[in-house]
Amino acid sequence: MLRIPNIMLEIHNRGGGMDRKRYGLVGTLVAVAVGGAVGFAVQNNQPLLVVISVVIGVLLLRFARKRVDEPLVDERIERVAEKASRRTLEVFGVVASLLTAVLIALDREEGYVLGFSVCSVLVIYLALYAIYSRSEIT
Image (cartoon, rainbow, N blue to C red; front, side):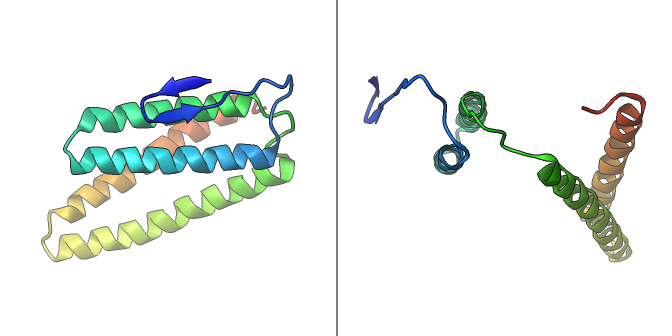
C-alpha cells in the first residue's frame, strides 16, 4: 500500500490490466483531482502547483492507459473524432472571425487578440495538414 499524507492508495497487481470501464473511472477521478488541485492553487495564487497538478494528472492517465487490455478506440470512433474536430475548427473559425470584426468595429482591443488567435489556429492547422499529407498516417 502506498501512503501519501492523508491519502491511501492501494496498488493491486493481479497480473492483468484494466478494462475500458475502469479506465473511464480512473480518468474521471484524475480529472476531478486535477480540477480540485488547480482550483485550490488558483485560489491561493500558486501557479507552480497548477503546472505540477496538470503534469501529474497527464502522467497518471498515461500510466493507466498503458494498463488497458482492450482497444480504447476503433476506426469508427477515430473517424467520428476527425469529423467532429474538423467541424469544430470550421465553426470556431467563422464565429470567432465574425466576433473579431464586430469587436474591431467597436474599437475594442480584444478584437485584435481574438483575430490573432484565429490566425494562429489556422496557421497551426495548415502546418499540421501539410505534415500529415506528406507522411503516412497510421
